[in-house]
Image (cartoon, rainbow, N blue to C red; front, side, top):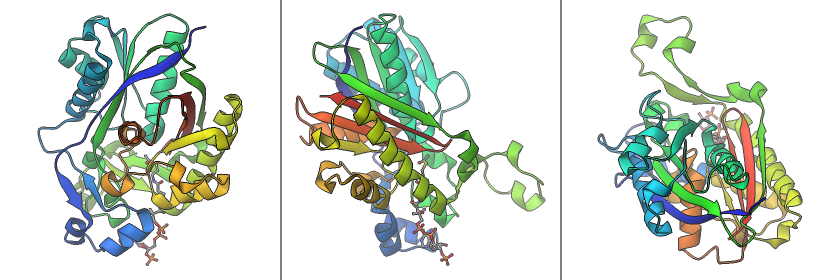
Length: 325
Ligand code: ACO
C-alpha cells in the first residue's frame, strides 16, 4: 500500500460580494442578527456567466499550476457538488474538457457539505490501490442558485466558491485516516424542494422559483455539533493520535456557533480551528476546500502538522479526514 497525500491546492471565489447590509434591503433581517447567530458578514455570489463548472475549472487550474503537472497526466477527476450546471454532462467531464485532461476518468459525487471529504477519500482509494496515479479533486458550488431569496431563514447563510487539490503518492505519511458516515433517515432536515416533490401544486406555488433549499435549522444545529465531534474523534482514533496532536482543524463552515460548540465539546482551543465563514458563508462542499487553501496560505498549517478536516451536511452525512501536511 502506498501513502497518498495532497500535493497542491487551488481555489476560486467569485468577485461579487453580498453583504449583510445588502440582505437587509432584500428580506426582514439585520446585520446584527446574522452576525450573532451565524458569524457571517458577507458571502460571494457567482455572476451570470459564472457557472459551477466555471468555478470548478478556475480552482482546478490553480491546483494544476501549483503542482507543476501536465493536465494530460491526470488519471482521475472527481467533482463534489450539489449545484451542477445541469444533470449531465457531469461537472467532472466539463472540467476535463476545459483543462484538456484527455486521459482522465471523470465523475461527480453528491454528498452536500461533506462532498469534498467523500471525494478525497474516494480518490485516495484509487491511488492507494495503484489503479490510478494522479487525481484532481474539486469541490465547487453555485449554491446561491438553489436559494429562495425571499426566505430569510436560508438566504443569509449561503455563498458560492470552489476549491481543488491534486492527490498522488507521497513519501511522507499523507492522509492517515478517514471516516465517512450517512444517516438517510434524517434527510428531511435539509433538502432541495423541486417541482416533482411539491404536492399539491397550487397556482400560487407555481409562481415560486424551483428548486430551492429548505431546512430545519435548530434540529440541524444539534445534529451538526454531535456528528462533527464524533467524526473528529473517530478519525483521530483511527489515525492513532490524540486530539491535542492536531495542529489545525478545518471544519465545514455552516455556522460559527456550531464550530465553537464542537471546539468546546472536544476541548480543542478555538485558535486551532480555522474559520473563514465571516467572508464566505456556507459554500456547501466548497467550504472546506477553500478553508484548507486559506489555512495553508495564511500559515495556520505548516509542513509536518497533523490536520483534521471535518464536515457535516444534508443527507444527512458527516465525514472527517486526518493527514500530515
Ligand atoms: N433575520 C432575522 N431573523 C431571523 C432570520 C434572519 N435572517 N432567520 C430566522 N429568523 C428568526 C426566526 O424566524 C425566529 O423568529 P421567531 O422566534 O419569531 O420564530 C428567530 O429568528 C429564531 O430562529 P431560530 O431558528 O431559533 O434561530 P437559531 O438561533 O437556531 O439560528 C440558524 C438559525 C442560523 C439557521 C441555526 O439554527 C443554524 O445555523 N442551524 C444549522 C444550519 C446548518 O447547519 N445548515 C446547513 C448544514 S448542511 C449544508 O450545509 C448543505
